[in-house]
Amino acid sequence: MIELLVAITIIIVALVVLMQAYAFFTKANSQNKKNLEATALAQEMLEATRSVRDESWANFVALSLETAYHPVQSGSPAKWSLTAGQETISGFTRQIVLSSVFRDANDDIVASGGTEDAGTRKLTAIVSWSDQGRNYSVSLVNYLTNWR
Image (cartoon, rainbow, N blue to C red):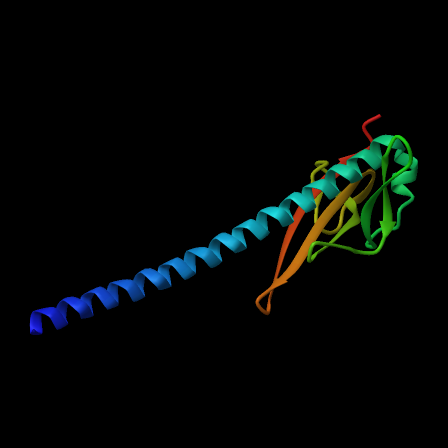
């Protein structure tokens, strides 16, 4: 009888541990999926912004710096443009912010000081979302230049 009780206890403990591991891995898998979706949305914003730059550098640099934008497709054939503000897609909020770029005497990009490079813009694509009361975000940074 004691052997049976010990065996049942071991089985119950093993099942509890397995259920906790399953719950942990299910949650981690869900979070990884959302992280991948957010990264794809941020990458799409960078590609759309690159398309806007390719269309016209003058129109691209005319956009306000340090202002949130989001990409929009319009026209026929469809072309990308940037519209002020954020956009929400399937629970993800996304925006892209353009910033000035500064270079030092060695022509290296620096965070502060230096001389402004009018032919380069820094892009920061930010995608954020909430899950079970916690906030998450993905941020991708890229630089675009006037290559023509």
